[in-house]
Image (cartoon, rainbow, N blue to C red; front, side, top):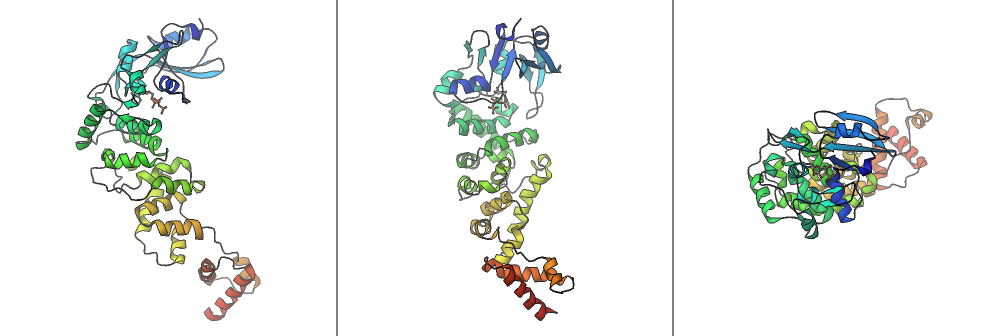
Length: 371
Ligand code: CTP
């Protein structure tokens, strides 16, 4: 049998939603009503690449593409906030879609005849630009859906329907912090790497940040989106989310999920906030080895003017003179070398056009008064 002729095979979730919206989709999700692994083993010209027996999923190679096929499955959330447990592989398509997050993500499209199966009103909600959960326990079972709702709202310019919003707000008043913060982190990244001020405004004003900390947060007055766009050429786009999420001072829950680099980006910014930066030399010395992401976070949580002064005016100022030059000037190597470089740097920060010849005469001047 050929893949495209198979009964009971459906595109599912994001790919159906994106096609209806006329947007590109990044992965192809297929679901088979029944056991996808047995199904894949009976298709012609297909290479099985990977099987995940407990979840009933299989990765195949067909027509030169890698495709994941899931079995329809029913799940229960034994522990709210954690991954659900599969209770049945090969349930009906309806049961499979009813375990999902939102109506817009719960549509299927038959591979054989392109018919759309919409049990939950996803088409209507797409028309009305609404994000709607499928049952009242949805956010309790899986609080990451609160962030997913924000992500899809921003991505598609949709809004959360009123009843879903009430349930979200009720949950946020009483968050169960025994949840998988690894999953929370994934959604934070996908939401805030969109670099959207609207997402940040909603995150703070609707108190979605309560998913991470019980503390109260006040909103930064700065337009973070604009700030990031201005310096986008200096940062790694994968780290944009840290400039937003780093504004939350209490990140204890999230911390175990952060990489060393991510932790450093945030902690360097907070360390800098404790310093008094009274002149260009102090500003330069504080930020010279920090990532631009850190400096942007500093701008948001402490002082935009200082941060931008460093990034726009000071960052690229470098002295040219080296230890080799000093040796050639018959100055014996010592700890004074570093003091001399700092002395030249202080001058150069106010006069960035200083030439190497002028730097050398400053060095001469320094050693004649300091030795
Ligand atoms: N899903 C869910 N609850 C979650 C995560 C996912 O019900 N917490 C379901 C949704 O039906 C979703 C599908 O699993 O459509 C696939 O999840 P994912 O790949 O994260 O989402 P997509 O909808 O494909 O969105 P994206 O375009 O961001 O990949």
